[in-house]
Amino acid sequence: QITDPNNCASATVTLFVTNTDDTTAIINAEDDFMDGIEVSNSLGATAVVNVLNNDTIDGIAVNANEVTITSSTNFPNNIFLNADGTIDVNENTPTGTYDIFYTICQITDPNNCASATVTLYVFNTSGSINAVYDWINAVGTPQGQTLLNVLNNDTLNGLDATPNNVTITVGDGNQGDYISLDANGDISMPLEFTPSADYQFPYTICEIANPNNCSTSSVSIYVNNTITAVNDALDAIDGSATATSILNVLDNDTLNGGTMINYAVTVNTISNSSGDYFVLNTNGTIDILIANVPSGTYTIDYQICENFTSNDNCSTASVTLIVN
Picture 1 (cartoon, rainbow, N blue to C red):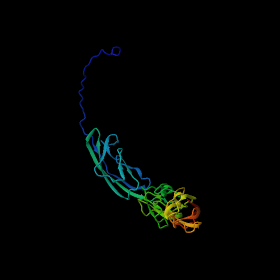
Picture 2 (cartoon, rainbow, N blue to C red):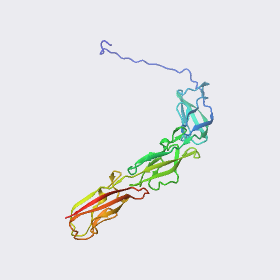
Picture 3 (cartoon, one colour):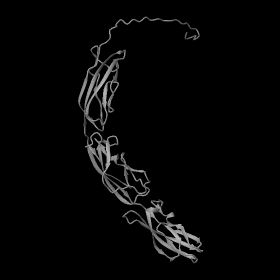
Picture 4 (cartoon, rainbow, N blue to C red):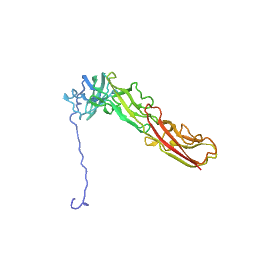
């Protein structure tokens, strides 16, 4: 009772249901044929055929809500049978004939089933493919970091080219070991130091589904390193005995604003006021060659120049050595 929720009573209702129609519905699956399906390699194709379109129950067209659909054979990886009876053909499906056996069963009577075959004739069309020139100024890029991806402006059938629909090959060029292009299209500099140069090389992209459909372009990576020699000074030097590596002039010199990589440059002495007392080695270290160096201030002017490049990339500085 609504006005008195504690005032209640219970009983049982019994229903005797008899199905007066014991006749099993006649279910019929008919073979399907789809000829000349043209599959764009970048887009694929959806709902190319519906296997239920010619199937019936008691002579009436089957509704997807009346049946379940299963495949008794493995579908190809690129072809999909959906619950509504439609078939999708994925991108990069090779040209060929595909026979797929399927079964429909009545939902209200799961043992009432019928089977048929759908045959797909897939013709893989070749789309337009376009590789576009790339370039970047790559000074000071850390080792291994991606500079650019060559596929970012390339297209297949007017859509983005990706590692899923194209392959990439590198042509002959001057990149050597300094520039790397991987299968995903990423370009990086794998070494700790990349000499100044204009690295140019061609690359080709080819459609995976049609390897003869290709396009070639090129990449330019401009590297122009900045090297800076910074003045050095060392005082309170004990000149009573010979010594090695009392200072390395490269310790405060920079490469692209960061720590100098010693093998990236060659050190040359421009002038040396100490005569034979001090020597500046090509690795940047300074040695005392003769014992009993007279007290005084000595100056060595030096120049560092970038190695492994045709660029005239140099910088000069001075070292002041004070012997007490």
